[in-house]
Length: 98
Image (cartoon, rainbow, N blue to C red; front, side):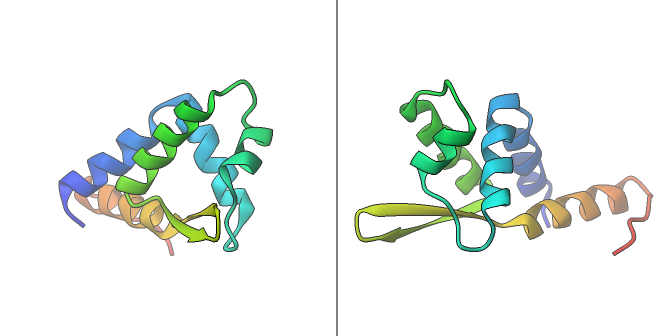
């Protein structure tokens, strides 16, 4: 994993509201979730703000979107977080158990 990818991942998760969105996507599991379902969990967030956060998470490799008919489903890619943490621990001289 390259430094820029790790920076993108941690930067994407560094905002409290975006972290809430990511947690909602992770909790949805492999089937994914729709923006409407995320808004039920992450209350008081405008739809356009949610779309922005989802785009940032997707660019960082933390989630993927799949269109099914008129719906878009977002599913987390938690392995990206694991890889980033392992990279960081290795670069800092630490060790992370599997």
